[in-house]
Amino acid sequence: MLLVEYVDENGLHYNLPGGGAEPGESIVEGALRELREETTLEAQVGPVAFVYEYAPHKQSRDNISGIHTLYIVFECYPLEGSFPKLPAAPDPNQTDVKWIPLEQLDDIILYPNIKKHIRQYAMDRRNIEMIEDFVLDKYS
Image 1 (cartoon, helix red, strand yellow):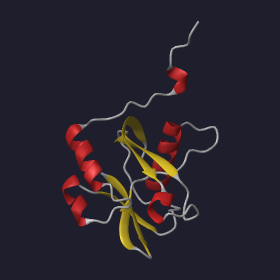
Image 2 (cartoon, one colour):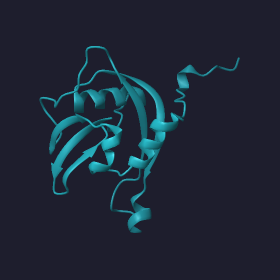
Image 3 (cartoon, helix red, strand yellow):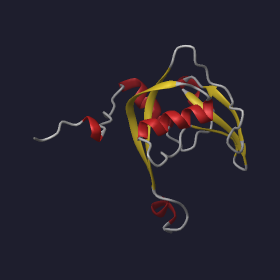
């Protein structure tokens, strides 16, 4: 699994590559851009692996501690000849980009802690199809 390494006030930890879609950009286009910006990897987006909701008001009982966010996590496939590396202008506190074998997930700190869900997805390959509006059949 390709992860982005950070060292900050929380110490050494990892995150999935990702971020938000920009105006005029589809979710898939945004995922590919963020992957490229954070890891330099060129890839093809596969199925939706899972959806993660960050709801800070449910954790702290306070609506101002963070932005309520929905993350769509895709399985991606590297394009032939493309290899990840630390970008020339990494994110703040980003120190590396690493392939972490699934067997070593328990040895790292991953934010958010979705290790169990990643392992389950890898075992079952159960996924959710990404339906994009522009490909739906039109009514006549």
